[in-house]
Amino acid sequence: GVVGSLKAFGQSTKFERTALTMMAWSLSAQDRDRVHAAFLELDKTRSGTITMAELKSVLIDKFKVNNQEAEELFATMDSNHDGQIHYSDFLAAMVRSRIEMHDDVIRATFNRFDDDDSGTITLDNLEKVLGNRGAAQEFLQAGDIVGDGVISYEEFRAMLLNEHNAAKFGANLVDREKPIKSIGNRQTGSGTLDGTEMLQAKVEEQKPGNDRV
View 1 (cartoon, one colour):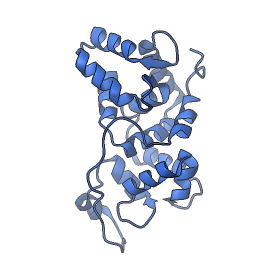
View 2: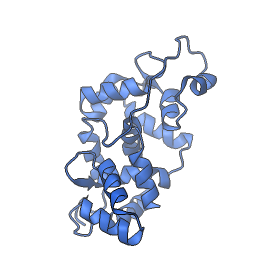
View 3: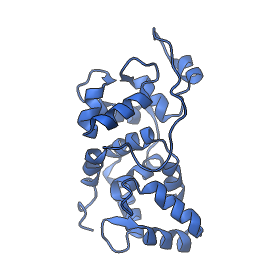
View 4: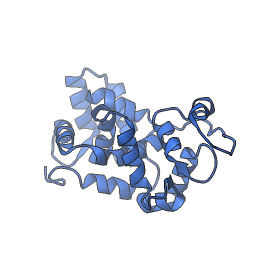
């Protein structure tokens, strides 16, 4: 449901949030319409964003979520820290409940980052997609499990399926010459990677009616 999806998104790493935002492109038009309908249930004023008051009103009245939990949930979803939940964040949060994480979907998402069809995601690829070199470097560092300066499909898939630790990843890795390094603790918390405004703007354009709600 909506509450479960928002909670799961709030607990996602920054890497996952950015990937899920890109994965939103894989939603069918029918699924995007359904997500938009759910968004409008929260966006009572039809402003194109959800305020804390709007979210709390629905979560408390309809889903019996307590006030503190509603406020915490809003904080994790307010990626821009502007006091609003944007459609791109809401859409990304709904992806896991609308799409099965099978290889076709993960591969399609990977290919959107790998815009030169090289078979790996490079820093240049990420800078083009995210529009910011700092965000690109952070994403690359998080996803480059083996430390070879690029993100392979295997690494990308492992990060999304939570198989990124050395034991799990190493067991499924073939013909890797470089030693696997630990990527440390996964960072969670509110917000997508800094500098993903370009990607979010593209997702906003998918909104049915393009904000004319």
